[in-house]
Length: 249
Image 1 (cartoon, helix red, strand yellow):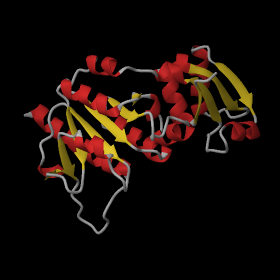
Image 2: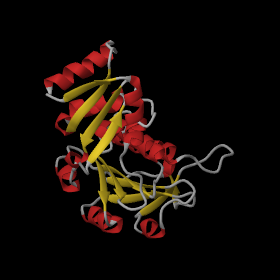
Image 3: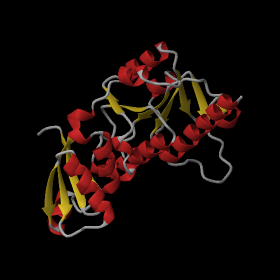
Image 4: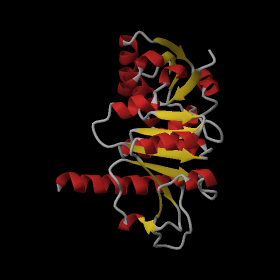
């Protein structure tokens, strides 16, 4: 199956079992492992009529390419992941909060960004199909289940998608050390999409030019840059903080 994808570990598989069980093709489980966490997985899989294959440690190590699988490995039909941006936006009960990742090719960074996005209630993560890390077992593992819960949308033309978001009244914000304002002196609009570029290179030129505003993250120490997932957490947390204060006023 061309759309088959591997997921590993309890976080990723539990999230998939509860969020989208019909996409799971089969689970490989370490034989003889009968702790409470594994039993919960087995009970849910059986309730959803998912095929369970008991395997030894060598088989699981081989399937997971020796990643830390915690005794459970699954194969999913990734074609059942598809979510359309229109569907996401039309079903929101609050102003959109989106994350656009431009040029994030490291699966560990992508997984960490998805985990932060889930924690901060991001409605969707958008990335270009080219020059971006795709969803794989490493991403799912690092994301601790967030890759199975946060819509991850890949688009063929990022500039066109950004224009479409603007037409919907969504502000496009980018981070840049030379931004016209800094994060702590900036009032975020109600509907926003934050663009984060790769550490070092940052956003591509055309993406940068598409931003409605460039905002810097104040740095109070000696380092000149921080990891993209850390930057993502900072801007999303501040955006959520502002929203919380506005809702109470």
